[in-house]
Amino acid sequence: MRLDKLLAHKGFGSRKDVKALIKKKKVIINDQIVKDSSFQVNPEKDILKVNNEMVHYREYIYVMLNKPSGYVSATADDRDKTVIDLLPSSYQLFDPFPVGRLDKDTEGLLLITNDGKLGHHLTSPKKAVEKTYFAEVRGDISEEDIETFRNGVQLDDGYICKPAVLNVLRAASVSHVHVTITEGKFHQVKRMFEATGNKVVYLKRIQMGNLLLDNNLDTGDFRELSGPEVENLITLTQKKS
Ligand code: URA
Image (cartoon, rainbow, N blue to C red; front, side, top):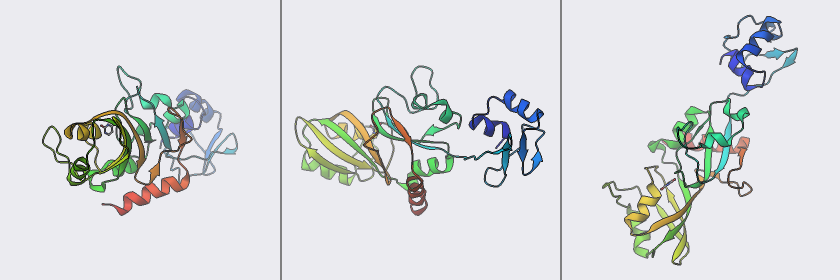
């Protein structure tokens, strides 16, 4: 990674500020004074000091967001606010992206990272990572619907979904359910219920692979993943292929 980008991530200011630090001979890598702000730093190996103090750097960030309704799962959008807008600039500097998409009106667990490899693995159809949603659904959910989910719901465009698990938590005119799918087709959960004559009126993701939405996070809040949470996700995607 370029030295000026790395130092910007660490809060040392703009490229211009970093240039000034270099000019003053305040930036040292592996005991050598750095002369060029485009120097490629290896964050794993190089020992970096600024103003005689060690700079500890990490390459990746892993943030769990409890996504609120009204935000799109994108890094930029002309019309709408994005999930990235919910993060402070100290995280935005890492160029993070949301792993997979939740609809604008869907809430819940969204992983935001700049680890492209993990993001790719978690969303790859080959890895078939399970995603569990809590949904409020209008209409009668029958045993037959549960069976249809288990066998593969046929969507409006003819696509037959992979087997899904539907658990009814509370049967009522608006039922509460958990549904687990291993794919990420456009509006998939909503369309699966539409196919069985029901309507999703509220949707929230609560789990992705072995990562659970933290109950302590209010809607719109976020926190960094713990070390074990990151490790578990990486291990999960390495196992499944
Ligand atoms: N399925 C949907 O219909 N919407 C989402 O946001 C996620 C899964």
